[in-house]
Length: 469
Image 1 (cartoon, helix red, strand yellow):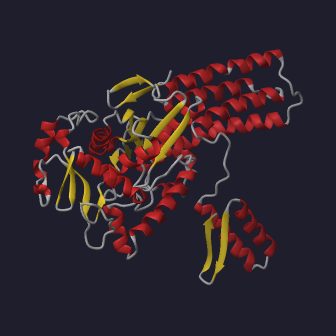
Image 2 (tube, one colour):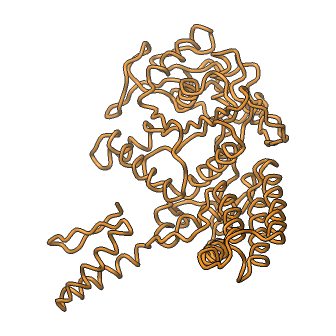
């Protein structure tokens, strides 16, 4: 029985999907105006692991995660570079997908783009106006927050407290609202910004309506799980509930899951503090499998502190697993006996206990930290019983058990030959030196080696340029 901590009820609940054997899951994706940072990476890794575990348990998971490709930050970046917002968002969606692949995150069933779903947003806003949940003023459409009686049920915020906290928001444009708590569904265009034609004038959607519409289109009016970082609980997810439920009259999502924040050296990540790291920067120093291991070595609802020391510990820990699997693989390849002995059959059966511990941990609100501890217990067991001279069947059996559990977590149980940027640069320098010495055989050898690792070289007038295939 899988139990999930539901932000809505503030307690763990037994997971019962709307449709037996199937799970519908929506996770808010990044706003694509730059390379993703390690804060973005945490929900990506967490919810990819949730999905993998549900699939391991036999569920057919329809996993939708959007890209917000129209936003003030995207427009600002486009104006700075003198290009279109579409060019910026397309560039960084491509870069985001590269980083996701490096972190072994499975592509979603669907990755919708906000800009391709505008018609659906106009339809939902129109329906909310018809139901008297929204109103238009001078080209802006607002949602009547107080009209939705259950507003605040996710964030557990009181409307009167919110009212008091919102008095400072009565600035330019805000006086148009009937109530300071009302939020924007559609905003009028500004000079130099992308816009779409609507019944209320040219403009673009508010952020919150985007996810409601994309979730409804690809998963239906009711979904099983909605996930994201805890910073999205209010106002984003609270507003999603209000819009979606006001429109459909049905419970929007049964289970709400939120991962906790990521700090850097015990401080909030920010560019001003100089502790802002992109996933790409981390990939220049570490295989991104190590970042994934680091993220999963804590429960997703626990705040996580990122530091160089913790990354080194994660590197060493992951290597322990990989070394054990490599050793078992070597023993299987060099075993003189192929079949299990009666004693070995008992040893292999003994490994069942660790798989049960793993499942118990994952069933308890996806406790990946305890699940990883179960993997290490299995590694220790395999190191103890997988001695020289064992049969191929036992060595392979123990290795497969470790690989299987790691695969559910999206971790590579075998070492991946990934070249870091500095290693590539060093090989290119060596190749250049070989060419100067007319050692073309060595130069070709290095080019071929890099090609095998997916590194393409281009000799230009400015020197050698390289890129990952």
